[in-house]
Length: 205
Image 1: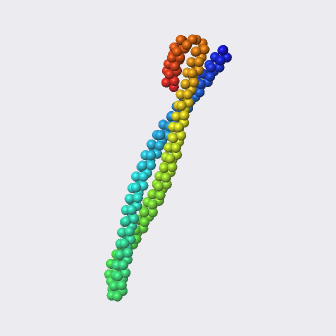
Image 2 (image 1 turned 135 degrees about the horizontal axis):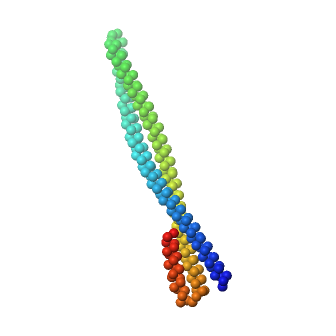
Image 3 (image 1 turned 180 degrees about the vertical axis):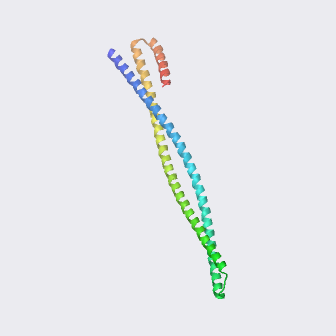
């Protein structure tokens, strides 16, 4: 009888140790889950901000492309006008040199402006590609964090089930221990007191 009592006491202590360990693991898992949720929210906000920036860059790129097309058309028109004027000057063997110089300056300025717009468009496209790469990275990280959070939630649920099972085992062990010490009339009172103590103690864990 003494050996059985000692064995049950040892089982109870082992269960209590396991409950303490599982409760600590559960608290750690919950803290990690909260941190992951906060990081997921931050990543989602970064993702939305990046999407908005990509949309703005796309609009700016379209605007620059339209301006580039417009300047290209102007340059072609000026080139045609220059050719016409050069023919007229050749036929007449006279001409206003200042007009020709002014037209050449206008063409040179147009070429410079078109080249500047082309460079700006190229830079804009590079920035857009960079942001798209960052967006893909954020999406991948968000998926990984969501998977980690899912696993943490499953682990926390498993710990909770184990804690409930250990509490049930302790109650059964104590009930058997008290029943072996005293009659059925006193067992119920002792068990109720022990259960109340267990509830108070574990509710603070």
